[in-house]
Length: 252
Image 1 (spheres, rainbow, N blue to C red):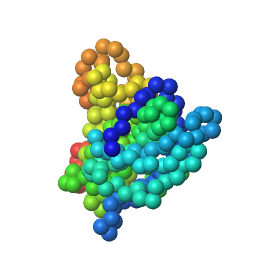
Image 2 (image 1 turned 135 degrees about the horizontal axis):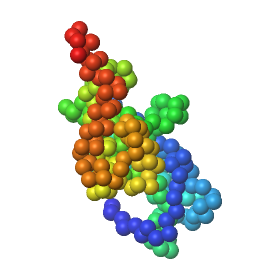
Image 3 (image 1 turned 30 degrees about the horizontal axis):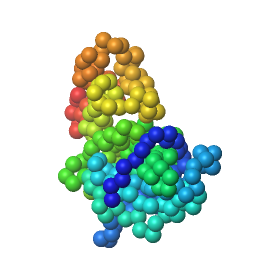
C-alpha cells in the first residue's frame, strides 16, 4: 500500500542501529532477510510510532511492519517476493507517526547494506562487493545516493568473488571501468550525488590520489577526460595489461 510521508522534523537513525542479513534464494524459496533494529532512547520518539523496514532494488520496494518504537518486533515472514532481481538489495528504516500527525516521518536511516560474512573483520571497504544473479551480465556497478557505489558480480560464475581478489585478467577488465564510472558520478554536477555523504568524501579523496593531485575547477568542465585520466592512472599503477600479457606468455 502506498503511503505519503511528511519529512518535517525528521531525526536520523544511525546505520549502526540496524543490522540486516539476507538469505539468498534457495530450493525454490525466494530470498529473505532478518533485521535487528534498535531505536535509541535519546531520540525521544513516540513509543507508539510504527517502525517499518523497506527493502528496495531500483524503483521496486517492499515494506515490512516491525512493530513500534518501544517494541520492535520482526514479522514472521520477510520474504522478498515482490522485488526486482538483478542487483543487490538495499534497505531503509522508517519510524512513522500514525496517531497524531499521521504519515509524519519521525526518524529514518537510508541506504543500508546487508552485512556480509566478513563484515566487521576488516576495515571499511571503499567498494563493497556483493554477488547476485545478474542474468548474462558478469558485473554491474550499482549506485545509491545514500549508500554509495557497490560492485555486483554474477553469482552464476563459480568463484568470481575470490577471483576478483587475485585474478589480474578479471581485475583488469572490471576495475578501471569502475574507477571511470565512479569518477564521472563524483564530478558530474547533474549526477545528484550528495556531497555531504561520507562515501562521497572518501571516494573523492581516493580518486584524487589516483590522479596524484587535487582536482581543479577547470578540470570539472570535461568530466569524461578527467574520469579517463583517473582510470588510466589506476590501470598503469597496477599494470593490468602487462600482467595479462605475462599470463599468455607474450611480452607486453
